[in-house]
Image 1 (cartoon, rainbow, N blue to C red):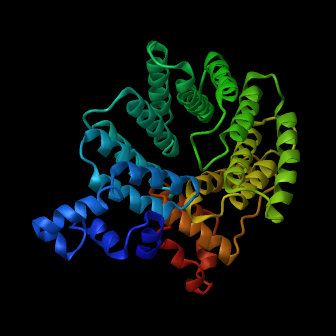
Image 2 (image 1 turned 45 degrees about the vertical axis):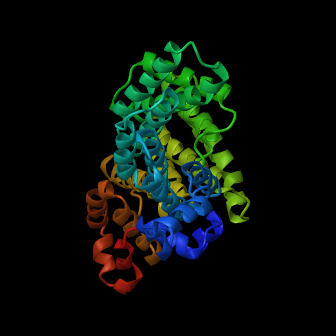
Length: 387
């Protein structure tokens, strides 16, 4: 790690070690004269803006672990509240990419609590805070903050409108999806229509997504399809047919290794959207089988350790299909996990505290826990090591 950081930052290994410890550049720095020399030699390389630039580059190249370390160095080198807020924002983004929305929520809130924030910094932190709330299924909070962001943008007449388009696009994407995710708790036709308009507006504004880990444009198209089924303009059968046909192509690309991670995760969202549509469809047809198949496919598209949030949603939909097939008199769906599948399931429990209790319930009620007792525990219990 230290060698990699030294290469990225163009520092010596000793400089990196001392910077991580928060100490002086080297053993000579204790002497005032040497301290002055070292400040001149190393000061430019250690400037906050240099670290910020490097962390942004690491974030874009998916070097999440190194980005987290550099972000921590940013925080230690920050001189005021504004710089600390920027560092906390980057730390929060790394936590989101690592599948820790609870940690990112704290970082973004702490960032917003710093003094000296300008309009842009406050706007960006609020958008990231929205994303953290969405990751924790806090849909009311996400909608409220996204609406506040849109109000800030509408009220500001001094800035270049083009500079605000990205922020508006993100806020509309989040608000539209927060409503969509709330469908099963009850939303009005008017709310659904506004959510659809939000997502259409996002597609108009979005040029380059501010979310480097997800193809939000692809997700938005699927989200509009789900909203259309609730508004009655598209039948669930037609929506699922469209989703399945699209996913067949995506699955072939996945097998051939042609999908970028940002797109692969978007197709996982399409699987979840399709499973949700199927689960609410009370018409004729294999309702629970469709839900089951699409939920399983979502797991296939989100098997990386840091994608535990997506998998947790997929497992819950899979279990819902399993339960539903038994309670409605439909053909019962079998629940079976191979040792590798069970290990991934348990890793998801270990990575997401909110999924721990539901995960145990699933293991017990499906009989998986009893069957697992006959397996070699080394094949799956190691999954409890946090991802």
